[in-house]
Length: 205
Image (cartoon, rainbow, N blue to C red; front, top):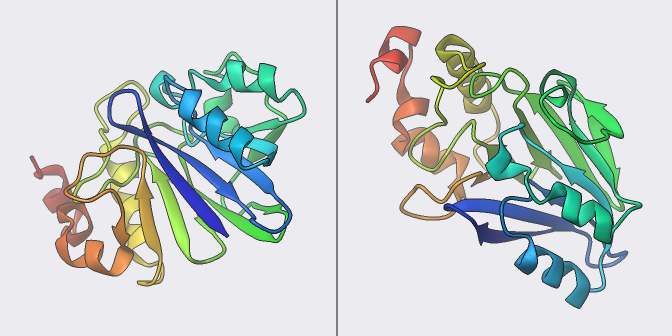
């Protein structure tokens, strides 16, 4: 299992998850500029099976059509709750505790509403978690945009907090002091994970 983190657009991260042996790959959150992403797929001779969208915002989805044109056999995956906001053909809906195989890699999905109603996180081989705009390094996503909910976001972050310390957190934006971190360290340093109550959480600036 290998995760390639690619910085695109306005401090966004696009990810490529791939198996180095069988070359199966998925792109997660193809943002505004897909050139580096497509170049990596091509140069590593990867077989793109899926395009996974953690939520519907355009800074995480805008290159989807271009990638589909380049790889028409790839399948778009997102939550059903967020799919209505996307002008794309969704091949598969994922929900809480859905699973997906990518070659020898197992992807587990968590429905983590709050930033959007259908935001999802992806656990990769029980080693890493791609958190989209639910959780950043040192902070979390906004809940004040249409469809957002402070209470839902707090509950989603509490679920992430219960996951194993060993997971590596890969966020949707490069807003932290480092691009990724262990969940163990984030539990100690991330103010949104430290908050114990919804009241405490809602007061975080």
